[in-house]
Image (cartoon, rainbow, N blue to C red; front, side, top):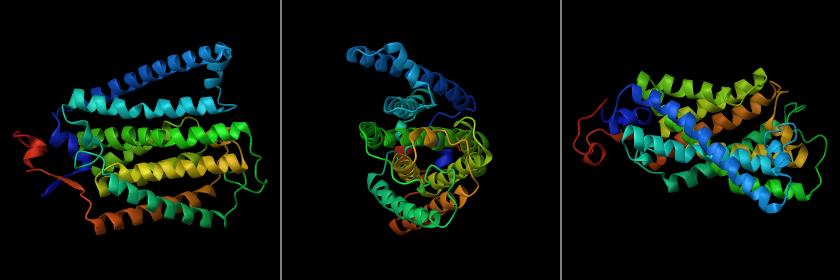
Length: 314
């Protein structure tokens, strides 16, 4: 065996014991709750400084029946908190440099990520083309009602989306395709478990949803999970996630509303051809490009800078 794939990195690079990833899941959830509490306190300070009604503004942060720019900002930052949480748990509990969550070379590969953003854009174009041929009634991307007018609220949403949505998408990738992939991959020594279990948890984490919406998110999670193992890192999944959210939010602002986009309970099976087009086209392009560019997809078990003199744990 020449190398070890991404899902087994915890077993190779970190201090391995079956209890570590299990405890890591518990600690990670608790740290996420603590991060959200700290974030809420920060928002309260801002509300007080603005002279706003703190009670009403705080209550509005949890009111999903009418999404506001402040609420979207709070949601994005809450999910972005998964990045430092994952890195901290990886370093403190698994005793390995946190960069190994990013990729099999121990860091984010920025050049490769730039390429994947271009590939994701191509996949989105294919999605838009396919979407123009299928019924869109009830979909947030349905443009049949005409273009919404530009308002100050629209401007605020755009600012939040541009600045914070990439962090939100990256946070979800570090949690589900990063830590959970390595945790379940290490526990079961299985690519299938490393991809499928985080994908199911990713879909369930979005709360109550109709079967088409659940299947759509499950498919997204499976494709992103395959990508992380096939390309050896989180870069491709992050790019796909960021541009997917940009497209969804952009269509919502232009033709629908953010409340519908964030609470898609009335899903239609007709949305699957378009979203699967995006995921599968991107999957094929990313794997092809990774092979052409010689992107590293596995850790060399014998690399001295990896094991630092200790024995392989796989």
